[in-house]
Length: 125
Image 1 (spheres, rainbow, N blue to C red):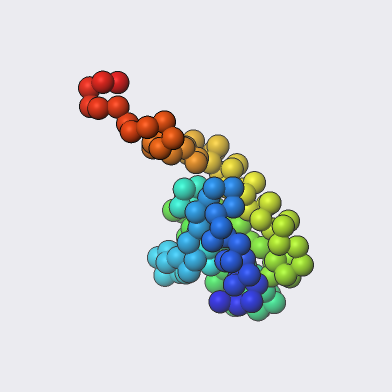
Image 2 (tube, rainbow, N blue to C red):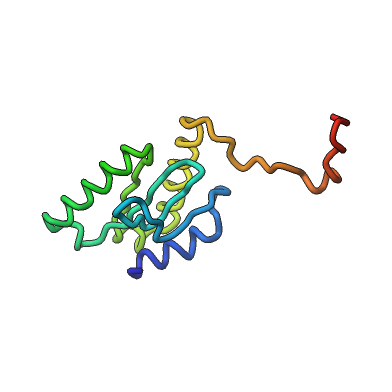
């Protein structure tokens, strides 16, 4: 992982907004920097190397493949990760929430509330 990816991963591991992320997630012939399965969102941190024409073509092919699988891609410049992590995290959580609404995902809804006691016995609902 690059420095910006490592710094972002350190924050994403804390599950901002209650969203769980994976790093270096395989997707077909590609590897996604970070992935939130709950809302089908791929996050790519793009440094200066992504400005090269051949890398831009590979990135376009990756984005096209992900789109065909129903996965949205959020590209974040590495420079922004280094300069304003709070802004990056705010944007990531906002996009996750928008995707959750769009996909109709049940976000951050636990199956059981331990503070409420055990679940009711079968048939007692």
